[in-house]
Image 1 (cartoon, rainbow, N blue to C red):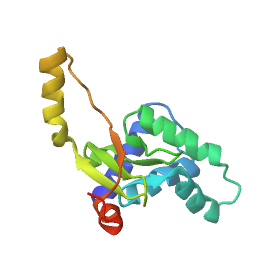
Image 2 (image 1 turned 120 degrees about the horizontal axis):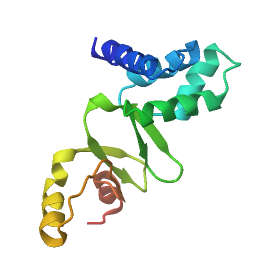
Image 3 (image 1 turned 45 degrees about the vertical axis):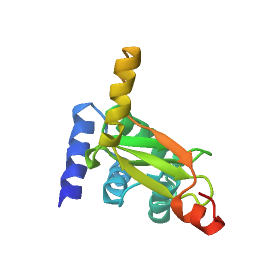
Length: 148
């Protein structure tokens, strides 16, 4: 039920900003809303293209760009050309990315509160950390190769 209301809220916001809601754009929104977590533009395109082969991938990228610029979805650059999207209402979080196996671990925004405080105290800098991706090696990979 929440996903449907997210989808309709996003469609409504696009209309308010004067965007025409084509079937292709609506489908992009529906796919992002239905995703369990992150989804790539390629995955969105594959879904749409399977049903409607004349759809161009540029339509997917333009729609995702509009959605991101309006603050309706977030884009995460996971490195090595891997960008994923998700609806913004799923809460602010950050990502740990394993450089060996590609695992993505979501980290709640509150974990950065200490860093924000240190930056303010030490540098007088109020950090607006909207998205952070930290690369490293996950616990599973470290255990598999015996590293600490």
